[in-house]
Structure formats: structure tokens, C-alpha cells
Image 1 (cartoon, one colour):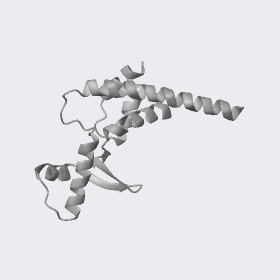
Image 2: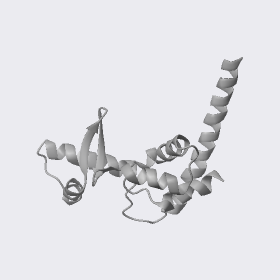
Image 3: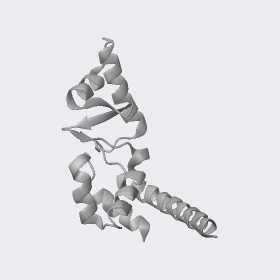
Length: 140
């Protein structure tokens, strides 16, 4: 019986999380609008930056954007995955943003915007209070 209740809570939690994710993504896209040069990178851009580092390692020619990326960012391997850093803080892919915010929110006991911002700015580049506001609007 306890296992069944746990399964029900888990599926309810998953359902709630998916609803929050949909609301967040909608709010985030509206907020992002026509902003340029966000540190939170669309997946395609993030992957292109990682590819620029691969090209550099294989001594392939880089275009102007790739040269700028290689100067600006660092690419390290973490748990078998290539991840990007800027000034020793991790860059976040858009597709990972909700999970990161949600996990920090839960890990910090349903933390509010300011505590989440404080925790995230330690390790991640480009997470602004504006991004967290778009999360807050989506969860209400």
C-alpha cells in the first residue's frame, strides 16, 4: 500500500512538474523575446561552441564566430560530457534551464528567488533575477 501511495505521489509530482515546465518555457520564451547575447545558450549555439573546440583540437580552420567563442569560453569534460564555462562558471543550455532551476528550488527547500539567485550565481553564468522572475510567474 505504501508503495502504491509513493507511486501515486511520484506520478502526481511528475505531472505537476511537467505543467510547471510548460508554463516556465512559455514565460521564458516571452521574456527572452528579441534579447541578444544571452549567456543562456540555445542548444544549437551551445553545441556549435563545443564543436568549435573540437575543430580547434583537430587543427581545423575556425570561422570568426568560432574564434571568438574559443577565446571567450572554456570547454571541459565532466562526467564524460563536454561542458562550457565562462570565467570558471558553467554555461546553461536552454533545454537544461528548467531542470536546473527546479532542482535548485527543491534542493533548497522551495527556495525563493533571492536564495536561488545566490546559489546559482556561484556556479552558473547568466542566470539573472529576470530569469528567475519568469520562473516565478510560471509557477503561480
